Amino acid sequence: MGFAISDMQLTSTAFADGERIPARHTGESDDVSPALAWTDPPEGTQGYALICHDPDAPLIKPGTYGYVHWVLYNMPAGISELPEGVTGYTGGMNDFGNTEYGGPMPPEGHGTHRYFFWLFALSSPIEFPAGLSMWQLLEKIEPDVLGMNRLMGTYSR
Image 1 (cartoon, helix red, strand yellow):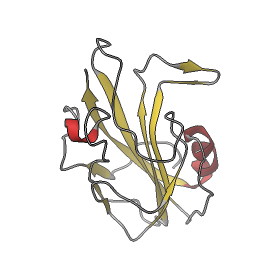
Image 2 (image 1 turned 60 degrees about the horizontal axis):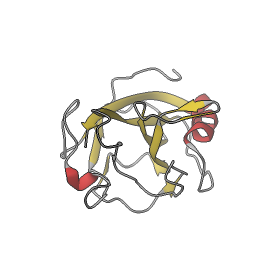
Image 3 (image 1 turned 120 degrees about the horizontal axis):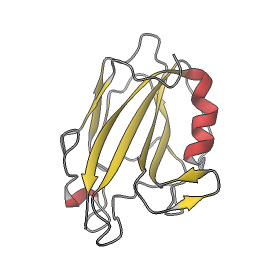
């Protein structure tokens, strides 16, 4: 199926799709990842990967745009949720320069930014080393993506 929206649904108890992300999950407060849950993964799913990206950030680097807040992978097929402040699994490199969740914190007065949490269902279990960038991860998983979907939250300062 590749990079195409599937019937899988991604939700959070912290915010609804298109709604404001609570301060608790931002760089202005506790900076803890929101709880996420999903249903209806594609048949044959053997693992998952997740990214959170802000395409509205005024940051352009060669070959990329926006700001990467979270890269998480090596998640097994047997799960269907991530608790708030999840630990475990494997963290990739975000644009804060670490492998942790980094919550929204757009520049003051820059307006409302959108934060896309993308979940990828994979046809094989993956065991990638820590520290992959979002783009490296996407390149590696592309042949194994059975389906994907997203949850979008907003935030402004």
